[in-house]
Image (cartoon, rainbow over all chains, first blue to last red; front, side):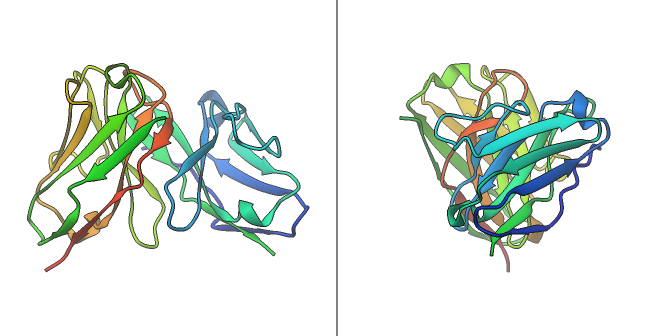
Length: 108
Length: 121
């Protein structure tokens, strides 16, 4: 089955940029979606179809996808961005939704 | 306003059964695929199942296939997850989520607050 790989954690100082990679075989050929989950809360989509940002999500959030890596970038990081972030794709070969293992973003 | 409210979670013994429900409102229920996603303690998000808008197509994670059954009642705007032969590793918060698509899974654009399922003797 298809596998998505994320680093377990990313630490960033306030005002700096957090880059969260999501690796997968030829992931650039798939549509990647990203979710943010704060402790005790339900997940929220922050990026869909690689680069589309839902209304209400700050412009500081951006996405890209090419080759074997998709990336969620958070610019000018704020304390409120501290959360777990998950990438997700639909694998049409196995007919399964696949989530990455998640990346915990810590704001220093 | 889209609302998804899960119910039916609780404590069950290994090998037991549980039926989760998700009451939906605020969107065209019969025109949306629906997903179940869970998060076990100390783990990440895990997709469980998806049902298409009409209910004709269903999809399952390999870890639950043959034990869980997803269904929906479009007349009642309700999604279900019948869970049989439960195992300790099924312990998790189970989320109901509306899919952006209609037939095959795309992404979950709205989520419920989740219901806790604990499998333990």
